[in-house]
Length: 555
Image (tube, rainbow, N blue to C red; front, side):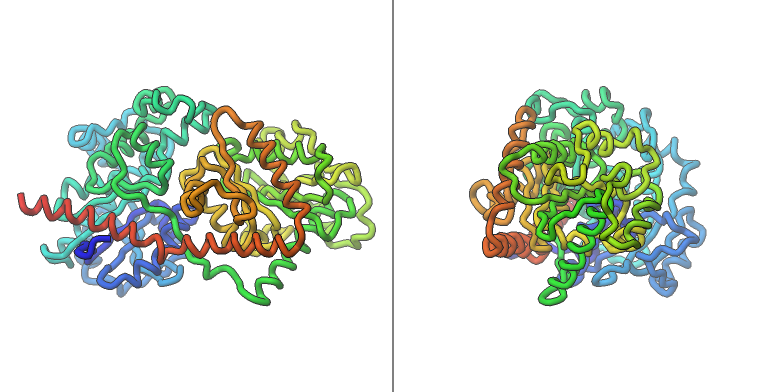
C-alpha cells in the first residue's frame, strides 16, 4: 500500500441490505463495519432503505438526537430520513431513507438518467423502480448532508453496492463532483442471469456481449444502470478475480480494485463451549434424521451439509444431489452418511407428524414418515426444485436399505423453526464435512463460514473463495488442506460429481486424528480471511476514488 494513501473524512456506504438482512452483502457490510470504525479519521455513515417504517426493526435503533439540526433543516424536503444505529458490532451510524414520495418524479428522473448517462429504463420491471428511486433519494440525502455539515476541504467517498444503489452513485457524480465515487458489483446482473437461464457462461465466455444478452434475457434496465454506474464512477470494484473477468467482458470496464469479502469470527465459540455446541448440533441432526427415516442411523454417521440461496445450478445444489445419488450405490462407502440441505424455500410450518415423533420415545421409530427427506411443509411441493430432484434421483431414504440419507430443511434457521429451534450457526457447527460445488459464485460466504467453524469444506474454482484458497496455497486445494477446490467448467459436471464422491468416500475412512488435523487447517483459512487482512484493499479503493476527485478539483 502506498504510504501517502488518501483516506476519506466521511464515508457514505449505500446498500439495499443496510439493516435489511437478505443476502451476502449484508454479511459484507455488517462484519466490515467495526474494522472501518477502528480506522482512524474515517466517519462512516451507512445508508439503506426504510422498509420497516412504523414496524420495529430489530437491526436498527433510532436516535432522534443524531444530526438533529440537519433533520430539522430538511423537514420540508420530500425525502424522509430516520437516523440511528445499526445493531451490529461497532454500532455504526445509519440513515434509513423513505424514497416513496419520489415516485411522482420517476419519469423525469429516468429521462435525466438517459440524457446524462444513457441508462435505459424503458424495459424496467419488478424491483427496478424501487431500487432506482431509492438511489435517487439517497443522492439528495448525501448532497443535503454535505451542504449542511461538511467543509469544501473534507474528503468524501460515496460507495454504492450493486445495481440497486447505482443511481445514487450517478446522482453524486453529477451533483457532488468533489466526492470520490465507488461502485461495487458483487455479481453482474447479466452474468447471474446467463447462468440462471441454463446457458453455458464459460465455454463461450469471450463471445458474449453484455448488452446483447441483456436484451435476450429481458434484464436490459438492470444491466444498463449497472453498466453505466460502472463506467462513470471514479473507482469500479468487485469481489474476486473470476468476477473481474466477467465485468471486463460483460460490462466492458476493467476492475480498479478487487475487494475480497472478509468477515469476523467473533460469533464462533471457542474451547469447551465449541465442543458443547457441536455435540448438541450433531445430536439434533441425528435425532431429526432418525425420526424422519425410522432408521437406526449410527452415532458416528458422517454429517454432510450444503446451503445458501435457492439457486439449483448456480449454487451447485444439483451437483450436490447428484453426488448423494452416486454415494447410495458406492461400494467404497463404509459409513452412514446424512446429507443436510439447508436452503430456504417457499415453506410453511414444521411438519406435525415429525414434531409429534420428535416428542416421543425414539425406540418406537421403526418406520419412515411420508416423504422422509423433508422437515417442513412446502407450499409448492410438486414444483419445488430440490424436492423434485430428490425424487427424480431416487433418493428415497429407505430404512436399512442404504447408508445415505438426504434431509431437506427448506426454512430459515433463526431459532424458531419448530424442528431444530436453533440459529443457523448453532446447527452448522455440528457438520463434519460441507460441500458447496458452485457453478456461479462471485465470492462464497457459505464455505468461508464453514471453515470458520473448523469444518473441512469442498468448493470449486468457479467460486471466488475457491480461487482465493488456491492463490493462498499456490495450487489446487485438497481435502487434507482443510479446503478442497474442485475444477468445474461447462463440460465436466459428471466428472466433478465423480471427484467429489471419491473425496467423500476417502474422508469417511480417515482416522479421528487426521480429521482433527483437517479441521485445524480449515480454521486457518478463516484466520487468513479476517477483515484485518482484507481491509487494505478497501483503503486502496478509497484512495483511488479520492485521487480522481482531487484531479477534478484542479480543473
